[in-house]
Amino acid sequence: MASVVSIMFAPVKGLALASVDAVELEAEGVRENRRFYLVTEDGRLVNGKVAGQLVQIGASADTDGTTLSLAFPDGTSVAGEVELGEMIETNFFGRPVAGRLVGGEYVAAVSSFAGMPLRLVRADEPGAGSDRGVEGSVSVVSSGTLDVLAREAAVDTVDPRRFRMLFHIDGVDAHEEERWLGGRVAIGAAVIRLEAHVGRCAVTTQNPETGVPDLDTLRVLTRYRSDVVSEEPLPIGVWGHVEEPGRVRVGDAVVPL
Image (tube, rainbow, N blue to C red):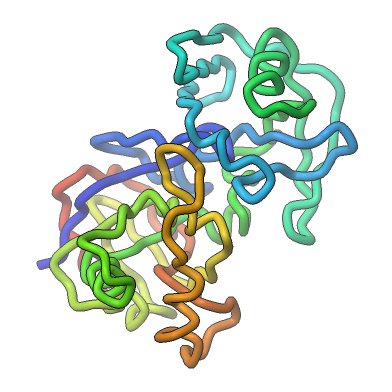
């Protein structure tokens, strides 16, 4: 039987993933997931393609986005209550996301580490900071899929953090999760509906610890996945939304309905 191997999400989009033992899946997904994000001075969304080194910064936040902690690789940290400033609207791949600028020490610390002036934003609505919004607040990839990718890339293993998925599952064949598209899947106490493939970009070539490119995932995917019928090119893993909220723990069963 398929089961959950790991649960990971990013409190701040583009920063390190937080690995947890359990999450509450609500209608908007995991409330803390990508509640915060970064933009350039002129308001453009920042992700790993812009500043891959940001993945070295750890982050944690409460479920309401009222507190935030950032941990830098040199051992320094910035933490405290979130001070909200002016309103801002950000283009998320053609979808507008409303938020508020965050003040305090966070901005200076992140900008200094990135080597460029950045601004930190808290999305007004939980779930809005995911690439596809609330409708794409859940993502799944299997060990079998990653094992095939590793063989195609001639490496021992492929770290699932490269793909920044919420749920990493085991106990199914390679790409089995794709055969669940359009259907409902029970995962722990929640039920999700899987909608589509997740297409891949250059961020997946980057080492998830350093942000430095070290594996040409796009070349490998082009060689053996370019013929897959998908709305997004070079897919690995799938995305969907929550139909029935519930708690999901590492080790929980994953059952297509």
